Length: 117
Length: 105
Image 1: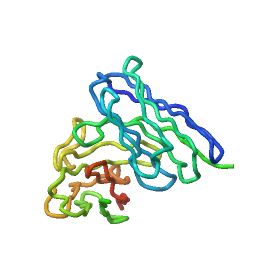
Image 2: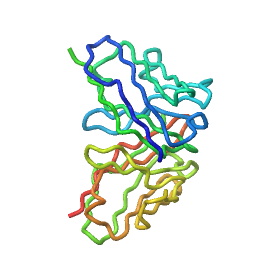
Image 3: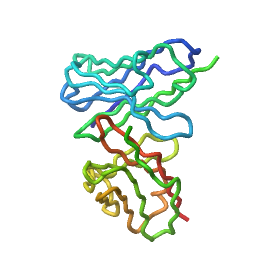
């Protein structure tokens, strides 16, 4: 059974940093692109970043470029999102999602990030 | 940047057919997919590559995509289908529609 379990969310002040983790199991993690998708409270879904199977290619939505860094450790079956210079508008539930041919076939339960003073 | 437009809300009576549209420039030239999200839960893929259903998704869910519009159709809508539905396509990067709240009443 495919499982994606996020962790690392919490309350952080504006300008602060947070590192999200996603533990994957039930599939060959190193064979898939992986993404982070977020959802602000009461709002829709927004793709944030993705990373190639071997970590050699990474892409970001414009609003997080230069502030967020996606990475992965295939030996640990884990995906990460380092978030720096956080803003109030980054407040959201962050989902880890597996990519398959331009769609997301499995999602984690999400972790809430709240940026507030 | 590429945009996908969905109606904010759609209402349907139990047992009737619900149609949710997703509009985007030349969307028919891309693959569209659909996610269902119930309150407090993660999104679930219900249609991919325009019209394919993942394992475990009921046959009452179907999809089509042509021209500038993709459509999610739910036949014989049940109360359990009440949820938010999001379309998604790919234009250099993943793009989501704004979501449609389906009410079954």
